[in-house]
Length: 504
Image (cartoon, rainbow, N blue to C red):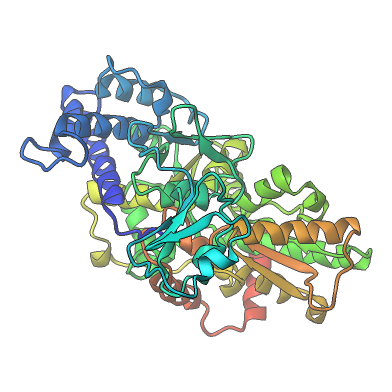
């Protein structure tokens, strides 16, 4: 997995911060915005590509993605300021949520196996002896006949010197559903009929060619207009991304200009309560398995790639939806802005009547920087009367959803959880396995679960594709956030408090 601390992410933040600064100053459409490429790539900079002029052109294209445009429709005759003007005039985000910068795409070589100079041409020759297609011969060292090779990997597995390596195309290898492939020009293209918007390609591309289209300009526009109240809905995973007290994050959002702040864990309480009731009903009528539904990348994966499992997916909607619904109930005219580390939520938000915009943690971090908000120095917000349960806040990490459902059951002993921690290719195979159980082609064994929790990101939402904190640190910060508030009550008392809030 590509480390989140990399140059591509650093450049992304610089562009977001500069755009936000200019917009807050009322100068987003001025000619000054056209100077962003020169600011980021000054004349004395060492080129990343062939020359600084090509680098600047790439920065211009990246800037357009941060303004919310698809690079595939790039017009080199238009200035950034022209695009900025269009961005301020649009009423809603545009499809699709991802865009591919072909000029940055390295057109990586096709997946292959290569013999390195670590090869010793050993006497045992296990690579040659175990190759099923006799594609390897030894002349001083091993040679692979590309015409015969079937890419099974047995040579690499059997080499005692680890001298044979697998060369992968990072974005293709990261995609669990085969939605990315090479076009006629050798560059990568996304098949949106297959894509589940997990964000793996965006996270793993070392050239930053796979980009999400930002909605930050749209949100700042509404905050500045002040014609409608803007409500921030922050996911539990967000509290794990900043090394501060969780209550300080709420203060930061209010300082940034949001009128109201709601924890999405409130919606998680509603989600858990509904899923618990649904699970009991399904088990009572003899269903073999039910799966959770809060991860929208997973739900999309089932709908597109594992139709046999569709009947098993919980009909309960996501915590994001229920929290946005609460916000709209309190203020029907408000603008709702979900904030999380997830790309799939941005796709879900386009279909949700209660969600207006979705920001990533990268974008809100850049917004704070543009406003010069020092989070660590902020006074924590006052504790709310209605605080979500610990189990609801734990939705953000693997195993949390299943546990939240279990503690709400009248007979928790009936639940047997199976956790799919990450939708990689192995995770997809496990989904297909449960799909076959559902249609009766495979009989469930005692070790199989009757409640399957699925998280597209290994570790849970805290490891989303737009995370800015590594998963180990995020887990520690989430645990601290989970314990904040209602420390003197039992989980059952907290659930009763949450139920009262939900019913009220």
